[in-house]
Image (cartoon, rainbow, N blue to C red; front, side):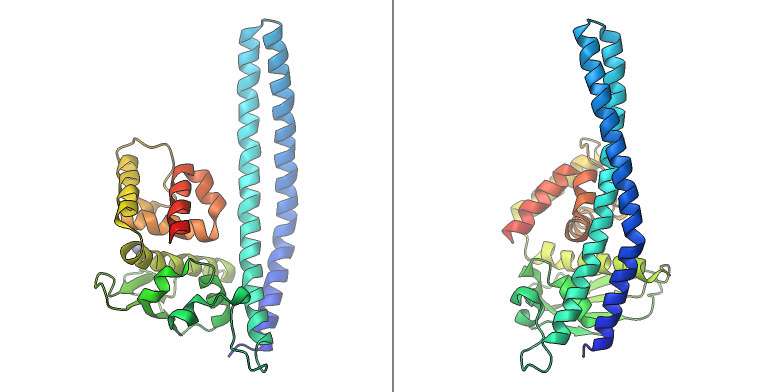
Length: 283
Ligand SMILES: [Zn+2]
């Protein structure tokens, strides 16, 4: 049962994270602004050189301007990733707050906006010591896959093969699947651990979504994207090394990124971001 303790912990974690990230955000904003200012200065100078018919100088200034633009964009992307982490933690806090406040009122513990997809689909959650937090994270996902899932279980020990998650019964249409997530032995920092566990959990959920809910034409479109990338006919970057393994791993890694680090996906690969957005919105 969620308690005031859970809420206090979620609040403390959010405060700590915010205190730690806020100065870095400020710094990144300064860096981004600085490079943006330089970019404008160089582009103006390039335009002037062009007017004066000094094309070599215009070209050189413009190239420097583009380099500044790139640095400014990188700082902004880093800042957005930090903001995403913060909002991720805030979401957990809101989930814990809601779970505590709906106790004792006779109302079932529900996610904000009445969107408890897991409860609606009758999904059982087992072994999570901070269930409201995980529920609130899962409830941000498109609900279609939950209807295919019977239970989601956390197992507090690493698997011998170091895989962090699995889907049981994935390829048996009509049968309920189970998602199992294991402790990651490598992550020592608790925030990083939670982030990586959320990533894994969403990745496994994405397997269910891809195999059971995504229409064949969209599966094929993703397959083409994956194959073109392997053949070098694609400009984007792999979102993680795991994405290279297969079109399914590629989809699941991008689905996780789309859910909790969308800017990272949009920056790494605008086309995958666009295709993923379309697939998710049609679910
Ligand atoms: Zn996978």
